[in-house]
Length: 417
Ligand SMILES: NC(=O)C1=CN([C@@H]2O[C@H](COP(=O)(O)OP(=O)(O)OC[C@H]3O[C@@H](n4cnc5c(N)ncnc54)[C@H](O)[C@@H]3O)[C@@H](O)[C@H]2O)C=CC1
Ligand SMILES: CC(C)CC(=O)C(=O)O
Image (cartoon, rainbow, N blue to C red; front, side, top):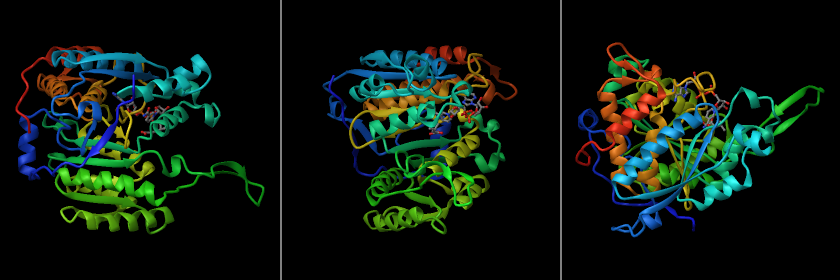
């Protein structure tokens, strides 16, 4: 099958909503991630009446809790799609530690080829103790970085919302967390995770060293900044660019280019913040943030931090997109080896990633609505995995949570936001 093409569709800005309107929306409407991103869709699905209603999805379960959460998310995706008359064919491929065990490498050529040829990719997570001591090029994490680079999905969109149902799960004071609704736009295929030179060596004193390089080119900055401005424009019109421009040259260039681009977006209020302050401000007053633009490593850290405002890392989905080709959709968490195989994992981050896949990868927003509505209904019923459990609710395992979401998938679709 020919590869589909994701496009950043520069649509007219949506009307910004006030915090109060938002809070009301989220209290009554399950569309957790809806209307928050620039419209991203494959060209095959971009027509008003999509000609193509059949898609190929590559599933990459990976390691640890990956297979558990992907199996459930696939069932939910399949059911929601079938109710909307969409046919999906799946191809499951190895990645990470499981690929190392099978083939000797963390990203087999066949896996990358299958991912590239599909309409979208749904990933669980990679990594685990078993592979921690392998040399760098053979580690599961290297496979994931190669996959992101191979698909050129440079923009990682990580929404973090405090759902009213989970307000008791936040580690912050209720009044600080209530109504938080932010989006981290993380650069995903450059920066210190990829920069050269890198490696191990010996310094002039004969001491062993490890070194990495934080490097960004103008084009790498411009393309992620554009996504962030477009995202902010479709949200509440506030963009905070997070860097370390008081110390790092790569950040100085980042700040200069982001500032220049602001001229194209007079409707977006741009601010800059140093990463150390941003990490603090996110806990002090998270509601000050709407859209956060940042580099690869700062975005990795800030979004994990943001997950605890929402209640659990088991709740946060993500979409990684490029200029063309399939998008990569994955929860923000890792393979959680401490709970793997124990039916304790929260599958909702991956289920919501499947909803993002439908909405932003395939342009199938009705099926995405169904999944998000089902997640909300399941939470409304009081079902909770251990990571989001609070008194008065029912503690369930990963499987039962998934089964309950499945039951709710054909629930009535609420009106669009
Ligand atoms: N995208 C990916 O595949 C990522 C992979 N990793 C890899 O995952 C492995 C473990 O890394 P950690 O630093 O422990 O991060 P992690 O995100 O896997 O786990 C951190 C903590 O959160 C909990 N947790 C994570 N997901 C959960 C879920 N769905 N439900 C309930 N609890 C959940 C875990 O049990 C653990 O206590 C490492 O090998 C790491 O390299 C880490 C981050 C991202
Ligand atoms: C495991 C790394 C390669 C990536 C990571 O930590 C992340 O993207 O969350």
